[in-house]
Length: 367
Image (cartoon, rainbow, N blue to C red; front, top):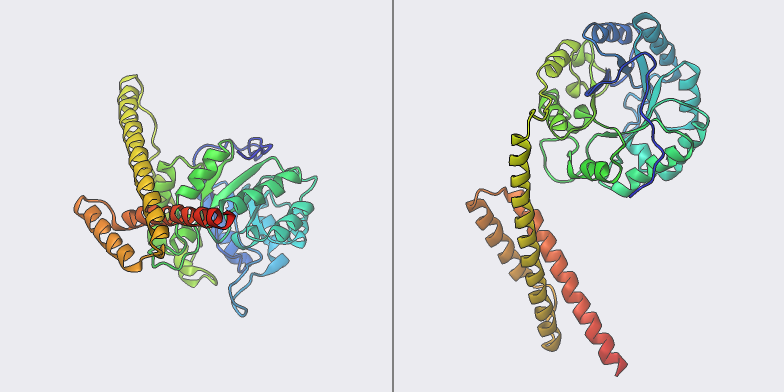
C-alpha cells in the first residue's frame, strides 16, 4: 500500500458534494469564447471551470493553446462568475504563470505523468503551494507510474491531492478514444482509499455520444466526480471538437445521472452479504481448479524436458483458445473476457513449464 499524506480537497466557500463537476472547453481559444462558455456553465450550477491554456499535441502544427495570453481570461471568469478556475500544467513555467493569475487548482496531464522527470519539475515548482492538484493517469496502463507521479506531488508538500482517470491508449480496436480499463482506477482506489478519483468521460469516449454512459458508469463505480469538456459552440472548437458538449447538453447529462445509495434497513444488506458469500465460495473453487491445472502444467513441463519437446506448441495453443472462447460464448460469457482469462492462464502455464526446464537444466549441470 502506498503511504500518502492526504487531506480533503477544499475550495473556500464551496461545499463539495459527490459528484464533483469540473467543466469548460478543451482549449481557451478567445476571451469571448471563454467568458461565454463560463457564463453558460455557471448558469447551470457548475462551480469549477477548466480550460486548456497549454495544449500538448501529438504532432507539430496542431493548435497548441494560446499560452499565458489566456490566463487573464480565466481571471475574468473568476471575477465575473465566482467560479473556481483550473488548468493543466506540464512545466515549472506553467505552474508559475498559473499561480500568478490566481488559478485555484491544477492538474498534471497524461503525457506529463508518464515522465517522472517532468512530474518532478512540476512538483518542485509547487512546493509551498496549498491548492488542489490532480494527476491524470499516464497514457499507458501503468498503475505504479501513476502512483509514482502522485507520490512526487505529495512529496512536494501537496496534501490536497486527487487523481483523474482519463483512460489508456491501446492498439486494439475499440469504441473508445482511450480505453477506460476500469480495473486500474479501481485498484488505485483499493491501494489508496482516501484518494479522490474523478473520471474524464470526454477523453475516454472521444465522442460526445459516449459521455453520458461513461459518466454513469463512473458513478456506479463510486468515483468522486467528473471532468467534462464543454464549449459554447463545440462544432467550431479549435481542438477535440467531437468530444465536447454544450452547457445545455451537459445539464441534461448531469440531471439524468443516477447516484446509487444503499436502501435503509437490514434486509438488503443481508441479501447482499449472502450473494457475496456465494462469490467467495465460487472464487475459492476457481482457485482450487487453477491450482490443479498448474500442477498438470508442471507435469507437462517435466514430460517436455525429458522428451526434448519445446515449451510453446503454437498449434495446440491456437486450438485451446478457439475451443475455450467458443465454449465461453455458448455459456453467454463475453469473448473478450474469456480471451483475457485464457491468455493469462496460458502465460502462467508457460512460466511454470519454463521454471521446470530451467530447474532440470541447472540440476543436470550441477552433476
